[in-house]
Amino acid sequence: ASTAELIRDEVHLRSVARVQVKGKTKPVDVFTLVCARGEETDPESLKWLETYEEALEKFRTRDFTNAKILFSRFLEFYPDDLLAKMYLDHALEYEQHPPDEAWNAVEVFKKK
Image: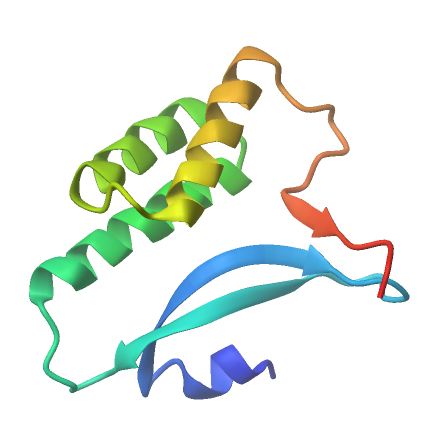
């Protein structure tokens, strides 16, 4: 099991990317820690985290139009969020120029 799977019941995680490192064939999901579950947290923040995760899922399943809408909504409340901006830019580009059929939303690193 991945580290994220082992700690998911104890913490809130935010997806960053799905990556494949040099020398590996299977991609892995990368997360960032948001906060511990049960820690005093603004409920609005967690609601927007759900919006971000939904947007990312739409992006990964090639639903770029809905990903664009959700990332834009998220950015109304977190306008300086670089990850959401990056994914919104990609969604806008892919909406106009869809990636080829082999695209799987995985960032492949060719160097260590």
